[in-house]
Structures are given as C-alpha cells and as structure tokens.
Amino acid sequence: DGGITQSPKYLFRKEGQNVTLSCEQNLNHDAMYWYRQDPGQGLRLIYYSQIVNDFQKGDIAEGYSVSREKKESFPLTVTSAQKNPTAFYLCASRQGPYNEQFFGPGTRLTVL
Amino acid sequence: KNEVEQSPQNLTAQEGEFITINCSYSVGISALHWLQQHPGGGIVSLFMLSSGKKKHGRLIATINIQEKHSSLHITASHPRDSAVYICAYGGSQGNLIFGKGTKLSVKP
Image (tube, rainbow over all chains, first blue to last red):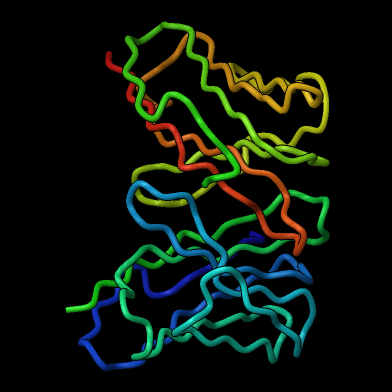
C-alpha cells in the first residue's frame, strides 16, 4: 500500500545528543514537509523540500537539519542546538501545491 | 496571532448529536483543508474545498470564501468520531497553515 512511514514511533534522547527521525514515502510525491506539534498549538513548519537535492527552511528551522538525497526519503536531524526539542514530529508529502497532503504516523521525541 | 481560528477549542457531545466546528481565516486562500487527528497522533485528510459544500458519509464541510469562514458538521455523532479536528489552508511554499484544532469527545 502507498503511504508515508516514520520511525521510530517513540524516541528518547539525552540532552546534547543529535538524533535523526526517518521519513519515507512510496507515493512518488515531489514535495515533502516536516512539522512540529506542541500541546495547545497548531502544527508548525520546520523544513520542506519540493524536489530532490533541494530544501528550504520553514518557520522554525533553528536547531534542525534535513537532507533530500532521494525522492522517497526526507530525514530530519534534531541537533543539540534545538533548545526545546521535546515534541511530536510529523512528516507529510504532496504531489503538487494544490493537492491534499498525506501525513505519516508521527514520531514523539522526548529529551531526558 | 494565529491566522486560522477554530471554535470551539473543546467540544463534548452525546452520541447522536449534530456537531458543528467552525474555522475562520484572515487571508485569501485557494482551498481549505479539514483534517482529523486521532489520539495516537496520525492525521488524515477529510476534505479539501475551495467553494460550496462537500459531503462524505456523515461529514459535511462548507466554505464561504467571501466571509473567510468554513464549518465542519458531523451528523449522528458516534464515539468513534472522537478526535481532534484541524482546519488549515495552503501556504506559499505548498505547506499548510494550521489552526490549533478542536478536540471532540462523543459520549455513548
């Protein structure tokens, strides 16, 4: 079945460590997005990529990095520079700017 | 200031009730999205609409572009409808701009 997978579902990290969240899609979508969700707030855009080997910062990119070496993969690295990384992270993809967006199941990151 | 306002923030209903969730936005848009987020966190797209009304099963979404307002209705609500309902519109980068969501709880 076509869809988006994210792994792991739950992730625990010690302060000062970098961690990478996986996002893979087999929908053949060009555009991929990373969002962050905090309690009581709407989802906010971290990074996005509209084509392979190209990506752009979103509204809250500080402390995060991404790569887009393959069309189907868009991993997100949460670096030690991110001051408050505990959150729920959602990956999404869409074929074009006027199409619906498909979401992965999310990764809940907790910093200990 | 959030560019998408939803009301109410929380809603509790009895099974069988008719439910309305409202969404207002402040900019001109080409389409509005209604999404459903279940307790596990996964998000599913319910509707994408640019005018008028769309219906899928017991769910109805309407939009008034001139008034910058949309509503999501659930007829004959059921406990399995309990979730967070989110409205969003398309941003300039193809991303979505999200409301904070409405948490719906339907009691049997």
